[in-house]
Length: 116
Length: 111
Image 1 (cartoon, each protein chain N blue to C red):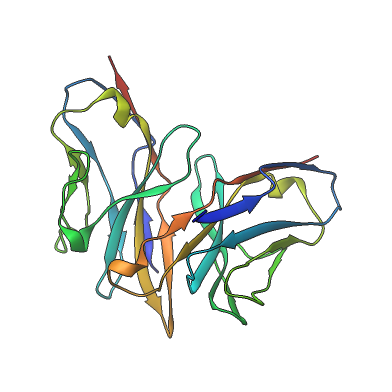
Image 2 (cartoon, one colour):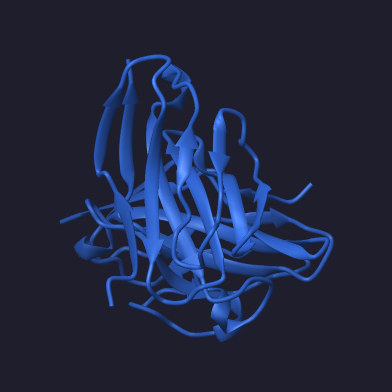
């Protein structure tokens, strides 16, 4: 049981390049989300999904796309990388959403992205 | 708007001293609040949630709806408590819910 797996762990991009951050979970969780972590800003929600085929925007969605074709995978795409997207990205999943004990979020180990 | 406020960025204490990490929230509905912790070079993990009313690693947090607070407390800090702590609020938005985090606080426990 690997939990939430993110790849890659580190990435350097040039401005204007595109790439996909991968996230996979093996816990059969319905709810998955992407956050970015910046100094002094905490964790900010980029996009989230409440199940396969369903995605929605978070606080800071601009410049990012997501899709959820399977329960297990929730990739985050940077369409045209900008220096402002330099950050640490975390993927998280939980069994359900709303309230109750099953809403604990499990996090991946993070992807440190630098855009030059 | 739903918001989680952690007013301090850094708290530095000596080992054995009491710790209180402050968290205030704004939400008109019934909140579900959490504390997450990120130790150095590790992933974020749940520390505790208000509905469980439990003590984890000596930490407790009580939801005070009147003051809209969910402060994290520990009577005697240990060096291994040094980490980044995030307060988080789960709230409903129509048919879905979101988990929003405060800006986090770094706790440093000195020997």
